Amino acid sequence: MTDMTSTIALSLGDRARNALGRRNLVFVGLMGAGKSVIGRMVATQMGLPFIDTDTEIERVSRMTISELFAAYGEREFRALETRVIQRLLKSGPRVISTGGGAFINENTRRQIEKGGISLWLRADLDVLWERVNKRDHRPLLKTENPKQTLENLMNQRYPVYGLADITIQSRDVRKEVIVNEVLEAVAAFEKESMKTT
Image (tube, rainbow, N blue to C red; front, side, top):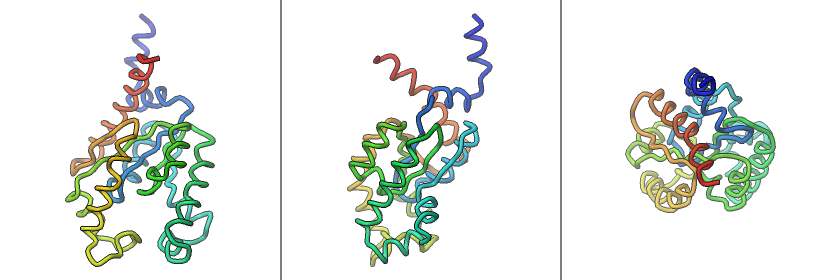
């Protein structure tokens, strides 16, 4: 009876944190899905540190993501991204937001599977386009038809993002609504996986 009462008394953030254990919660998805904004809010609710891998890459390389792409190309950038994510996954728990291409890399994806629970913030094209076309810092969208490029990225990457442990639909609602959906899904995730073990 006491266990039941204490479970009820726990906040949603606490329940999600308990379900996470020592693992990391790793946000994956396309640019504009809200990984950094929602991730930071989720981390606050769970009382955990938040790290954005793009920010961490810029810190260690002392270059912006755009500068890294221009100087070294996407392949070298992805190699650096993988190394940074591997290092971040070694300690936890924490909430980590990854760049759009990180989960697509098979090696990085395996590392995330070992060290965390992956959560795909899935968004429709119109939602993503509305969010990303206001800013000019996305190296992969520096094309003649950036909206078509974004749609092509969706077509290529969504099947791989679909391998994530949890999927939450990112849409134009109050951020708190998405945050609560994430916390509920994380809190419930352990229960689902415990049933199968």
